[in-house]
Length: 294
Ligand SMILES: Nc1nc2c(ncn2[C@@H]2O[C@H](COP(=O)(O)OP(=O)(O)OP(=O)(O)O)[C@@H](O)[C@H]2O)c(=O)[nH]1
Ligand SMILES: [Mg+2]
Ligand SMILES: [Zn+2]
Image (tube, rainbow, N blue to C red; front, top):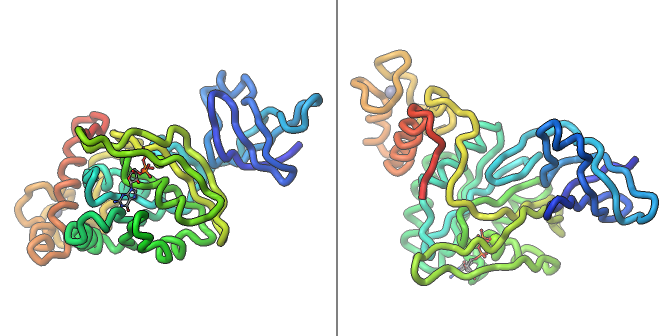
């Protein structure tokens, strides 16, 4: 039996990287019966078929450190939330869903603001918003090759997933990190200013300077992944930090009198955009609706 990591999954085939090379595997039928399916990033035990050493089957998924629905990845150390300044202008609400999803799984989120070349001012304004969170914020341009050294420094020796809506430049950024990467990149529609969902499958890539990175498909909505409205504040670190003196125990920080969040907003400790995201997500969770943002 051989152990390896799933680096890609397409049409029912899983590509497993093992010490003995890349092996194309099918999942055993029992996974389907048990409602479990292998994910990219999974550490798995496989058996090779007798006829072809390059083929085999996934027998067992080893325990996961974490797993996400969107992006569909398992066993990550950190999540780089990729935002584009323009073409398409990223929804910050969607970016905040991603930081919350990461936080809820105990995974560190980082922010990468791409396409800095298109609007330097807007890039700085977005950086200012995320500086209030305490997360690492990197400004980059895949086009002009800026911010790449910073990006490499945070990716080194870690297992990271890049996530963000379609067209923000996830694949373009990754292509700049290694000569060996030749990920397909797409255009942004002139009409809708949206990306075209160029990356269709999650792929795990080995970085030449140490570490691994997942390129993931961009989505237009994200699942809330089992968070309750009451828990939400824990996943906004800059809001959680200031709520201690709220007048009411169990303050939801929505519009209650004596809420400490209001003051922190006035003092600039919380960015209004992040607070708007908090409010929108809180309301969505209260209605027990899936988060759906266009
Ligand atoms: N001006 C500018 N364009 C960029 C930059 N980065 C990427 N692009 C362009 O943005 C478009 C989309 O880039 P992709 O790398 O395919 O975006 P993606 O996030 O991988 O998109 P999906 O795979 O669809 O999720 C391409 O036309 C890129 O050339 C940048 O820093 N500046
Ligand atoms: Mg892509
Ligand atoms: Zn409060």
